[in-house]
Length: 113
Image 1 (cartoon, helix red, strand yellow):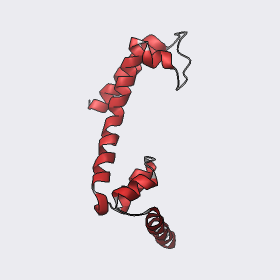
Image 2 (image 1 turned 90 degrees about the horizontal axis):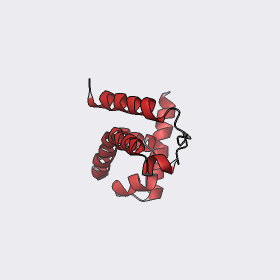
Image 3 (image 1 turned 90 degrees about the vertical axis):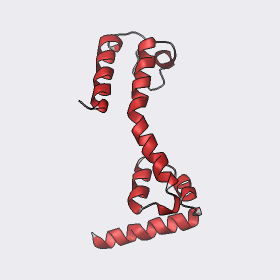
Image 4 (image 1 turned 60 degrees about the vertical axis):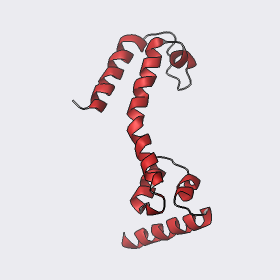
């Protein structure tokens, strides 16, 4: 079993065994009791952060490529909701130039489809 599946299994086991039926669990994303005071909630948050780490590492690595970013890199970063201004800055471009390049690429793809 790979690490990601093991983490997901731990999350399921912890949540099913502790959180279902708990009066403090209102399934709200902003439930601060669970993430600040409950030991199970803290552990769930820690495990969730482990799931996010590979994406965060990839994001950092791509942004470090700077002017060597490919269109595939830019597409992935945009899908991960990295702000355009962050990508543009990484590529050493102003926002106007970045938007022009992106729009030109979009038009090229539309011609191919």
